[in-house]
Length: 76
Image 1 (cartoon, rainbow, N blue to C red):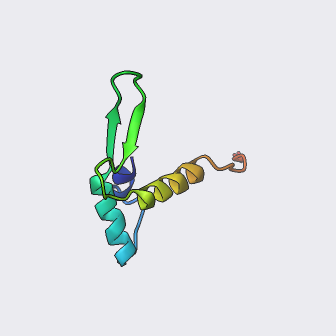
Image 2 (cartoon, rainbow, N blue to C red):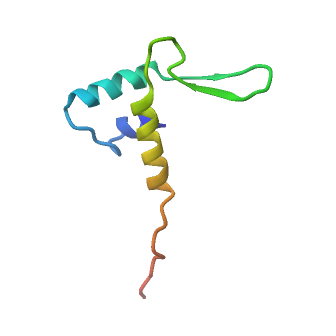
């Protein structure tokens, strides 16, 4: 979902070294389903890779989308 938000322009990143690191982490991020219990396994699953920036961005997006918004008032 994060890649989709980046590609459609809903998330904008500055041109910094951290943004380049996030881009690399997104490319390394994997989702696998464990066959025994059917539980998902997510992250940089290969040894030596990081996924902390992807996790931080994902949490930020999740809480932004779930935030309380004031009710809309429609005037006629």
